[in-house]
Amino acid sequence: MTTISVTWTAKNAALLDPAKPITTGMKNAEWDNLTFLQEWLGANYLAGAVQNHNHDGLNSAPIEVLPNLVKNGSFELDGGGGIPQGWTFTAYTGGSQAMSATSIHGGKCGAITSTILANGGGYYDSINYIDVGGGESYLWKIWRNASVANISSKADINWYDPTFALISTSNLFNLTNTETTFTYANGMVNAPTNARYAKMRLTGGVPAAGTAVGTVYFDGVMVPDFPAINQLSIQNSAVGQSQLKSAIGSISAYNVINSLQALPGGIYGFYPQVRGSISGAYFASSILCDTADNGAVTYFDTWTSFVARMVITANGTTTVYAQQSYIQASPPYDLGDGLIGQFIFAIINNTTGAIESVYSAPEAPWHNNGPTDIRADFYDASGRGWRWQDVRETTWEPDGMGDYTPRIQTVGREQIEITQAIKQADMPLIPHPFTGNDLTGKTVVILDPVADLTWQLADMHEQGVSPNELLHDDYLRIDNIALNRQGPPGVMVVPCKWKLT
Image (cartoon, rainbow, N blue to C red; front, side, top):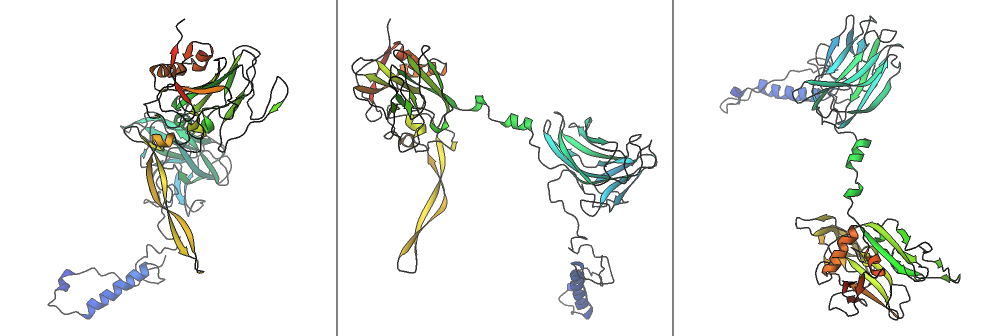
């Protein structure tokens, strides 16, 4: 490194007396101090004190640019006496260490030399205790190299409890033939559950291991300052079945050819399960289906928004059931008369009084199938759902030809509460799950959604008892008197009761 040509003159408070004249010596000292600073910052001069920082990339003080828990892991800094800063060295008999220029991760590396095979060379211990979390996993990285073949080396992490007492040791690698070219070694190590601190130990020339003596070089030692993401941590953090806010919805058809019905889960639903009341019932799960009775092909109109639908065909006097698990959107729901326990729709044949199709789910068909997104980004302390929404502003800019061009830009974000109005916004589009069917001579009804019986049916549905089956098997009776309740357009709200016998 270059040297500085002048000396630094410290400030002398006694010379700053206003009554004293400014002397030539004082001005020369000021100019020398400016020269000193100029040369120290990187000028090339021949005499004077050693320049200690010239920003040339070689003589600058090294800085760890990654969050490394191991201090001076590249062995660039001399801690005094030729021992790397941040490390201690313990030599075996005949062993020694040096800060070598044979490096791959900077200008220097740690070198441990053995001269007696039986004794080995020695080992570095990191001085600082590394703070660790008990039971967490940590990545480690080390470059290693040997001067000749068949020299042994190893790396360990020692774990300590809150009182700094040694708990155990994890071996990272243990070689009897260290590579003769720099080799990058890395892996992951798990801290004991009661560990709170750790230290790194690097051994070059393990006593009586290998078949040769010589020098082992260590460089680029790193334990990143964050726990590793391993399969166990993924498993522990993963969302399991019990954490999903899910529900089950059911649809069914009795003695109906091609009953088109909306599935309650919409885009958030899983593949439906299907069964029949007896063997021989059949169904089709396509918008285009082939009827079994006459071989004719039936086409169904599609809606203008994406809707998950299924076509069910029930053979003769049999009933076909389908159920779908789905991720719930944003309950609870209220159409204006109170909180709703279950949405139960049915198609009634006006001539026979038979219940042809049933839909039952905690969500209505418009909640997950319509174009309106009713999901909440977060909930407040009172349980109300909110969503972030971009605030956009339109400005009109002249185009130079006498006209103006609109320019839309996002100027911020605002919180929008997921109100009942938003939740029910798509009700006019999908007022019931049977839209698309020929409903001539039939009536679509919804069971009183706020009645105690409906809440009871909701609880039973969660326990695996389907309201669809109770209705088709005549355990429940639907009244034909319309209630004064809020409901979807074109759908009669009716009471229901248990059959007495």
